[in-house]
Image (cartoon, rainbow, N blue to C red; front, top):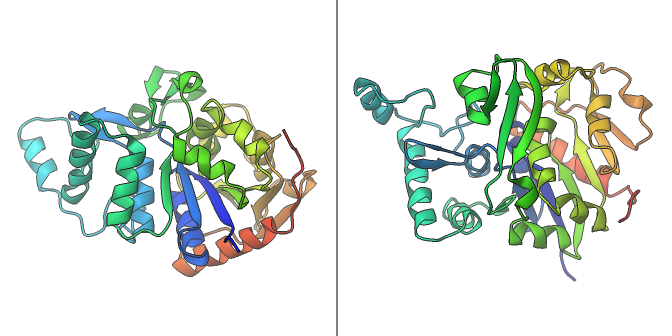
Length: 318
């Protein structure tokens, strides 16, 4: 009998935490994590893929436990030398982290795809899940603000999310195609659940859904789609989700997050702490503690999400 598989859609820190829980509670080799690459950019001549790297480091147990991104026990000799030379240091690259960016850039120049490189790194890190970039094509998240249009990293890191957001667009998405292994994961006949991790819906999940064909694959799959709200007690644990929702004129609530995914979801996981009218949704709900402060928290939420998904039927077919 073939073992069922699970696909997770994820961005950076919050999504990677749940993905790590899913990896631990599922049989080895049955989790596929499709990761946002709209944040990717070139810096100091290197191809940086922040969400993919956060996912790799988190699932390998290498992530910095204090920040959630970057590597634990990092050193900063490279950045110190760059600063002395008057170089560009607004996006900090640790010495161990730098090795991954250098190697990725070299292999891309030699003709390998992001999917091939990521799969090899995941194998070398001992990760038992498949980490799949959403596309091997170029998609870039652009943020229109009161200070003009900014690339994602300019907005998120250089400007520290201070500019007011007016709208978002995903440059290149209309011409991009799902990476082959991501497409195959969503077409798998043994797929039992699709989990949208608690990543920023607008900055992390929308770039994935914007890739031509991804939403069709979600609809065509017989597996139920379940999203975990990124809001805990009406607030984002990390990142600018609540700020962006408010600036876009949207209610900052789990209910609004579910509405944002309207037409995609078959079930929704919401935090048990007070959240504006979340239970008024016409959608099956799991109300639970979604805060993931420890590894056992991640594992518990992963189990509960999978058990919830197993109770659902597909609400919308293609």
